[in-house]
Amino acid sequence: MHLGLVLDMASSGYGDRIAVVANGESMSYEEIARLSWAATERLVASDATSVLYLGSNHLSYPVALFGAAGAGIPFIPLNYRLGAVQLSAQIEAHPGSYVIYEGEPPALGNGMDAVERNQFIAEMRDVSAEPAPEQDTDLTCILLYTSGTTAAPKAAVLRHRHLMSYLFSSVEFAGAEEDDAALVSVPPYHIAGVANLLSNFYAGRRIVYLDRFDPEIWLETVRREQVTQAMVIPTMLSRIVDALDGEQSAQTPSLRALSYGGSRMPLPVLERALSLFPETGFVNAYGLTETSSTIALLGPDDHRDAFSSSDPVLRQRLTSVGQLLPGIDVEVRHEDGSLVEAGEPGLVFLKGDQISGEYAGVSLLDDDGWFPTRDRGWIDADGYLFIEGRADDTIIRGGENIAPAEIEDVLISHDDVVDAVVIGLPDDEWGQRLVAVVVAGESKTIDIEILKELVKTQLRSSKTPEEIHIWDELPRTDTGKILRRNVVADLSGS
Image (tube, rainbow, N blue to C red; front, side, top):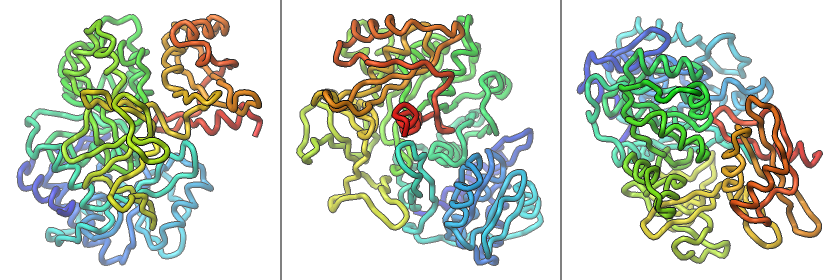
């Protein structure tokens, strides 16, 4: 199936129902379809090789995406917040592109047409076009640059068949009520931005876009727009919790579901959020750019049962990413490729129709279709998947594999710590030594020896950082992932 089918089904099924709201303006499903067909006609006439989207969430985003799909060319949302040198390099990597931008026009290479996003919408409204023809399902639909937390960003290839497989296996067509509304504040160049557009569009849910995240604006928008579903990344939820400091409840009665993902959720933040949103169903959605978004879910019932339980095994599931979606297979392997036992950590491999595992010109799938996620994790006896972090983040101290996440959770549980990261630095005796960086809360004072004792008491001495540094903030990507390589470089002097 081709992505154009989603546009056709939604426009026929939902008609003049409002599809997208952004910056005080709105569009119906029918209008988005008409403008997308016009965009397809424009792109075909211009011989564009791809569509580059440089901007925040906006009405032009779905029109550009579906327009590119109809023309059979890749849609490439770029991180418009990148520095000039890095952004120029990504633009130049796609000659012949049609560029839709926000604000000042970017520096362009030869053979590129560019249009400001509001002008783009205005021009498409003046064009009358027929529905776009069906395209090959194996065509590249979207190129998404990875966040590059441990290496330079790479362009992940998502074909139409990958995205359609994700939709068909995880979203019910017309499954939303007519008054349902989804608040989307994740950026358009992230897989969550793409997935939120496609899944809510397919379900028939009104999408309310924020062009920038602010916790107070987020809460006000949920209340004003009667938002029923929302998706945040962990740093966003942490800021929302901080904004509700002193409150007993978030006072968002319409919010039925709140999903989170994109990076690891600190357990103390999640527990506080569950208390502040008692009537909201929480969903942990785990996926990667290379897997066309979500492949595992920890649902509302799992959150409630684990949060209210005194059973340590059941309560531990709050730190899991849940169970695999239908059509997704998982294996956890040793370094030598052999399978591990249940409950034993190893390298996570995934397989399924929605999984691309492909970068521009290079596929990481093995001969049997398995994708190496480069995440370390384990599966419990009931099939719940636990992700410890990236394999590159694992610290090997004296032959012991140590996952930074469990140490970071202990550090963040201290009242004076609002953020933390643990890394390994070279050590002649142990191979690597544990080093932590923490960010202080309002008190701005932290007793490092008390923090060390806290970790030693809750874990053990071998997992206690030998050094703890206090910084004003940690380097993060726009989607909340800690740039560990920056921390390592700063602390190692390289």
